[in-house]
Image (cartoon, rainbow, N blue to C red; front, side, top):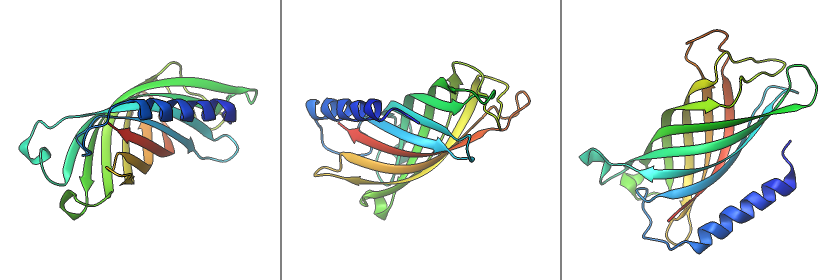
Length: 189
């Protein structure tokens, strides 16, 4: 498990940073920063993760400039903590990644509720190994499905729940993949 003092300090730091930045009018096409935590649950050798990231709006097509759809680049750094394959102490991994994130906001774009899907690539700082799973490469593809809600006076705050899959798409075996359930808080400027 993560040290609760570390998690608390990270949340306070993100909160203070977001309060200190000037805010623009809310829309899905505004940049933002986020903090997320999650778990790949599979019994006693589950893997926990904590990450930070930024979202950057991108609208290369007219359909993404107005209406219920938006597209963002999502750039992140995560820390994974997993049981060691040798059943000794936990092992840590650092992951960096980039994901293209397509969002649909209900009610023609006026609803606080949204759903999203993403596809991207990540790199771990080592080969991920647990008692029940072993990756063969540090490079991984990632995709996710999520649902969330905006809140706050301008809708500048978001909470979302995501399921995210990480695997190397059979570039090399073994390729068991990993599935994380993640909760994310995002603040848009």
